[in-house]
Amino acid sequence: MKVDYFTIPEITVSYKDNVKTSERAVVSSSQDIAKIMAVAFEDCMEHHEEVCVLYLNRSNRVLGIQNVSKGGIHDVSVDIRIILQTALKVHSTSIALSHCHPSGSSKPSRQDISLTKQIQAGCKAIGIGLLDHVVITSESYCSFAEEGLL
Image (tube, rainbow, N blue to C red; front, side):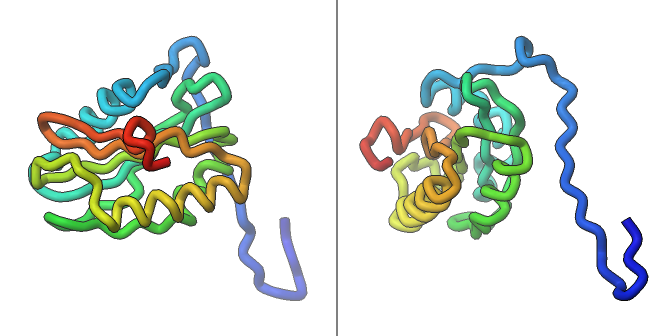
């Protein structure tokens, strides 16, 4: 696209999918999320907090995983718009959020609960489900869905 009368940047949005549907991991429980995310957090689990999102299709098959934030020893900042933008870009029908706690305690903090409510509201506004938020440590995990926090 070329525009002569203004200098306007062209916006392109793309998602390249080269994995067969039958080869995708399926998420059917919080334990599945915890297993996948434990690998994603392997290098940071005991050092700093990170937040990752699994993007899922209607059959709860994983479309992709995204690290949306890296933080410090006891907190992390998350821009919800990045999560929702990616969910729309990959045509996700639901997401599963997860982050690690280097402290070793899988108990969600007030900030974790607040963030989850904000993400849940954003997802609802655009018709995407929030399956779970799983807090991971090197020895355990806590599922917001299982604890009735969603």
